[in-house]
Length: 194
Image 1: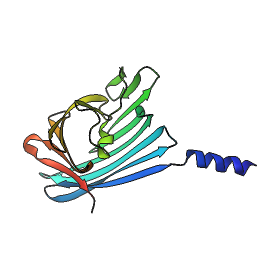
Image 2: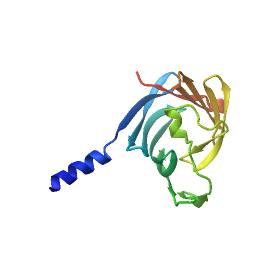
Image 3: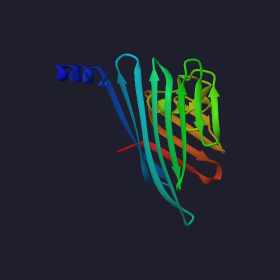
Image 4: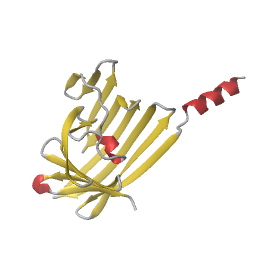
């Protein structure tokens, strides 16, 4: 009998749909890392996203290492939880966000905050689909909305923080390139892994 309950539990909680995307991280034409994003849907209302990224480059005699790990959960299309961990050159920042029924509670390196509007469109979702909101997108790492706008057919520009601008480029509804541009320092690209 115990095995029947275990089997029923596993069947009920097993993903009914899963998708995995891999992207090479490219700087000055060289692959410096990889980003893998997974989406799994359980039942008819719960979607889980997981992002893992790592890159390492030597720029002007200095080593630059970045590792990211995100876990997001959406229920019926609304964000209900986020765990975001970023490590840049040994400095770790963690952001957690939880839906409390009427607002989100966010804990970030610089304090605790409330977010009073539901989130339906976030940057991780942009790996799978073109933006769902034509004016803004939620950054899981920063825990805030950023502006996004369509600049050409299948191309969107998002202004992030510290002079960083993201260009999302799609073909046939699929992400074919994410350019992360920082002024005169140039761009880092994410392109589908070969």
